[in-house]
Length: 187
Image 1 (spheres, rainbow, N blue to C red):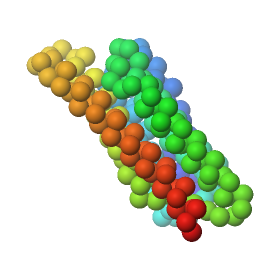
Image 2 (tube, rainbow, N blue to C red):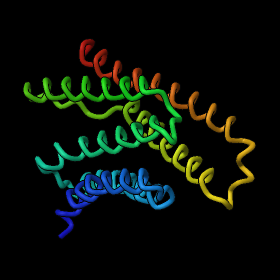
Image 3 (cartoon, one colour):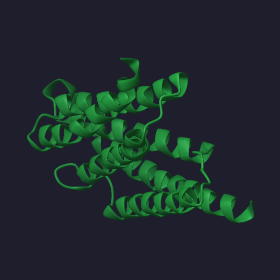
Image 4 (tube, helix red, strand yellow):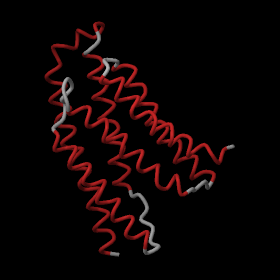
């Protein structure tokens, strides 16, 4: 039974993406926030379980990183459009370009039977992206709820903070992507 758990968690993550988007766009930000956090938790556990028990499948090799990229990019897209509009669309392009470039590089080397492991910059990038997305979703959710109206005077400051945070995230994303390319060309 445990051998199916990592792939099941990956499937749950993929299924949660449209649910997250529908809830967000449908005016249910708090439920959407919990769905996104759930999806992030499945990302953490599917990898840990797969490593701990040595469960590797072709499905998992393909779908786990794809699910991660779709989860992050869909949330970033949501954060770039009204009514939220916390980030600039160019950040999405930077992050998407990095993900595509690194995926192509990894596939190229995999075809030569060389495995490029995730490195610390890739892990930092993932944590920074997910933390920023969750923070932005929490801010948006709180500002949309009547019980948090006391935060409204701080809205502009919070949005400026998030905009700066996501530009820093874009820089970390670029560094993490460049690290893969320089690592392989120097080895």
